[in-house]
Image 1 (cartoon, one colour):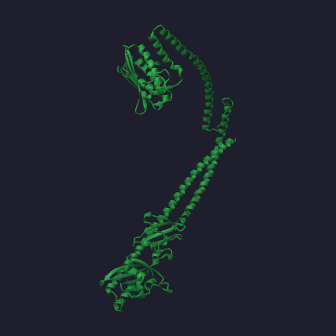
Image 2 (cartoon, one colour):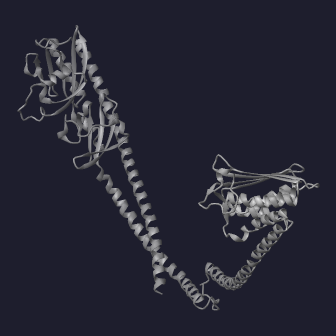
Image 3 (cartoon, one colour):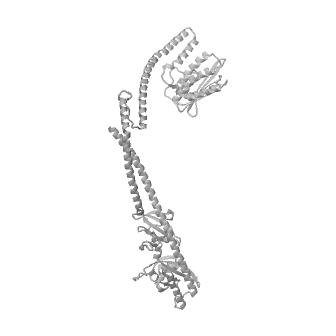
Length: 598
């Protein structure tokens, strides 16, 4: 029962691990998708809000273009004022400029600049006149207005009248974004300057501010024109804008990681940047992750309960089946007689029937094994007794050989000597393979006997490659091929030529070919033999093809994937059988008294 509990725990544990891994991977994928979705939504919202800011700034630019036209028209009609005098045209021009404040309340200042003088007009109709000899003309602000390349800039209001301001009026501390237009009058270049309150630009992106983010309008060199932080005016942006990074990118500033979303605006070379900590939008992700993990734990608990109940229901028949297996092995392999309670589960019914069938099959197999073992013992005894016969035959033939030599009949003695040498390998050695030299010596005796039997009507030529004399091959591999040529190729006048060739190929293999000029096979007979050899089937005639089948089966045994066996024949054109086998070496040398290949 302890093993059963261990099995239950293992199965439950494996299933819970698989389910846990599946749910964990699914949770990670869902969280990843939610994170990506929220990030994309935030980017899309920001980009759509950027469009609104761009439209508002375009409207402000159109208003300024109108103001520039009005100012230049007024100056042209009344004549360019002589800043050094207080003439009537000069006064009218100043009044005309100051009246523009009634139309554009967002303007902080309007100015007219030349290389030698400047007029600054404020919304309260106050005028400041400065000459090239004044210190303010050497300031960086005036240098940018008169010689800078940009048509816009940033300044504090007091910088238009003095380098430093120690007053307390908040008006002169106001932040101004000015815009410049140049025109020629009387051969002299003048600049019209309109200063826009920075808060007006700030108003264009108030809808983007969410409390935790920072929004910036930046110009060239990442200089901040307006931002959601009042102290960032004219400072450099902390993180550089990377236009090649797509819609958004991440940047680490200090120890905080920020999501940066930049977008180019339609006026000048300005850009708007929305910067917020990634931890802010990750709050929604974390809340979603907690919800998903809660569902995951609930699903895991439900699956664990279902698995536990299911395993307990399935383990009961398994326990009973396990007990049956133990009883089957401990009771001498006797089939159980009791009925297995499978709980109406079809698979267990099939398993029980299969077990009973297996038990019966094992009993029959054991009985058959005992019977075969008894037969093998009988065969061993018969084989030991049969070994006496070959020894007796050889001894008898040697006696006849001696008698023929005494009687002076040398031909009979030589014939008997070759017969003894031919049959002696069958029982003198138990090796399954021998060298090509031994095979050649065996064939010499066999060919001599054939030539004596068939007189001069049959010629057998035998050619062996001397370089492979010490390599090995299966015993008696070539002799059945010669016998096949004699059995199926002999002509009616008992004449036959057989050629035996054994040589080494360039690929390191041995090519054995036995051909004759006999009567050959008819096409249908040749096809039947090829099919018999390919499938190792028995021939229709029990006496036909035994030698070839024997060779094919031995080749399949010794060289399963590395041999070839081909047979070609035609009526009255002879038969050729070719065998290709791997070249194998062996330290064994030819036996004493046997011929060597030359």
